[in-house]
Image (cartoon, rainbow, N blue to C red; front, top):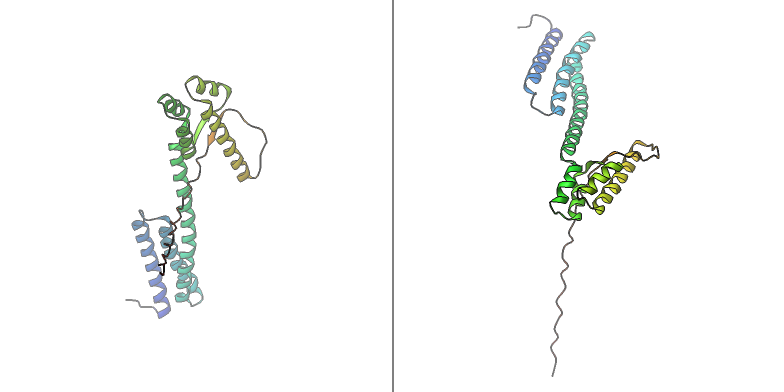
Length: 207
């Protein structure tokens, strides 16, 4: 039992609750998403910090509540930023793993796939290709058609232009060598609903 006055009793309980909550959150949120985890930790820390600050001005209860709210908000913002960063990293890793290379173009060409099929694969998956003079000769001598090579060149120019526009600066110099072709964004196809033609009204002839 608490032998102090009511203010000190609440302060002590707030410290204990905040500490136990923090321990439980850290132990139990290892598999949860970063937003919930950071918000939970922020709530526990905010409760403890608010109680300590409020205790100095005889407002431990109000300080604990304000600290909990501020901690949850700050923790949620930090957790959301971490979740977005992890999602972007996972997407970049997946795109890198599925990207095509020169040998994929050669293998598809020698397997008899048509140019349009190979070009569609480049647009969907992107890739890293050697467009230096030696690289172009290597592709051509191993069965890759001019149409596919030209499609890779056009895609590399478009990728470089978009990257320059995103960075806000462009050197204006085309660097020959290994280029990165970004996959084309997936477009949603909306199929319009079929139009129902009204049936013509047959009029009976009056005799």
